[in-house]
Image (tube, rainbow, N blue to C red):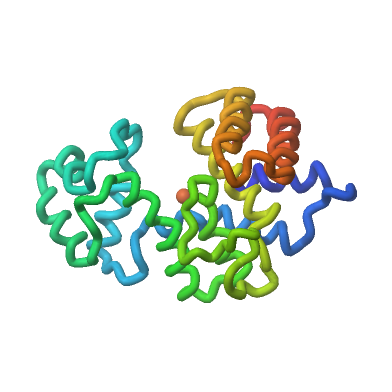
Length: 222
Ligand SMILES: [Fe+2]
């Protein structure tokens, strides 16, 4: 993802759309750290972290409304009960749908990065990488898209944060769903259209246009 970001930055360097040094840092580090929360909440011990990493490593799950408890029985039949017990000890709701569990990772990214000493600008960007799905941990994005509390020089959910979201999803549909470039771009446009909040957002649309042009030129290289 970081290499795709660099292709994008280079393509607009020297133009009015050029990304600033701060924006570039937010995008590259935000892409790197956005899924660090897939290791679980900051309070998780090593065993809890391993169980949660295992859950996120399962791909191709069709029924995202099954409970976490059912999910564990289906995918880890040998020791499902001990995994459930470890998650209960972390205070996690095993009756919640697995979709809700997956969505927790943005908040866990926020917790972990805030304790890590990572630059605040990057923390906010990494934690908001599922805002298209309305996942807004700690309600850090206000309705006017400014951050509701200080994150260094990063004042608002804007172009850098939107690019992280788009690169994350483009990468996922190409690598995991196996879509070609044009289909992936079409998928991104449709995904933004489904968001009531962002369907008319000029940044998202300009960024997808740019990705459509320059990632294509970069061929299949990801
Ligand atoms: Fe994620």
